[in-house]
Image (cartoon, rainbow, N blue to C red; front, side, top):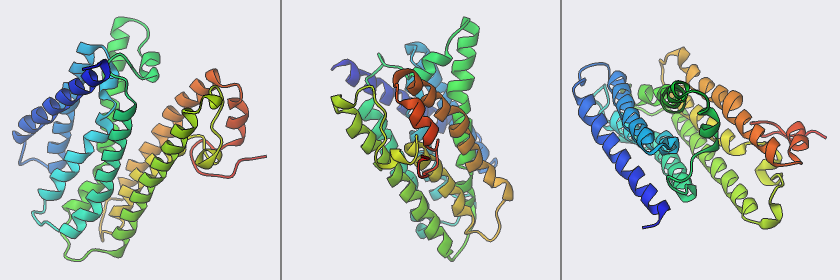
Length: 291
């Protein structure tokens, strides 16, 4: 077993333990509001992964949590809805894009992760200073904040799956398709970048072809669009909380103000042609480059 295989095995074991722990603890709170039960389980799983990240001194153990955790959450609220009424047509329309997104993103991570010897550069940059500051940033910034963000962004599917309805509105089909196409867009962007990066001729240069001609981060645009698609599903309901728009908006702000900026700063340090590319190319949305 090489280092990469060992890392993946440890990661799988940690996530299995996180799932089991979250189910055991959350079962004690069944009878409360269902989303409170989900949130408790989500938090417990995060704590298990954080402990493992601390033991192995590698916060990248948390990376797949972003795409792994939503799958069991979505399955739980789909087949054990608060209304007690199971609508398989609705379940398919909601779960299909969620599971497609989850499997694709998790596979994409697993295919690139080098094991416990490799840690995301963003985490390394964030974990600087005193030991107290490093532990604070590691727990609250790298582990807890993304969990809270995903938890908030999953709220729309709780509402769509919990509401009992005999008929499925046509708009739910549209929203489900929108979310699926967002994952396809993300997949195409990742594939284009992978093909570009593996060619030695392109080393040290910026990808400016395909979707990357119209956005500096088209993969993240696909990611944000997927979460927006989950919100669109709630528009098929006769009654939904208007404040739910916060869910996709907060996801957009996180990518636009934090993630994309960190990636841009790294590219500015590594590629001489990036300043020009950055000036003429949209940060997130697909838009024709300026001249």
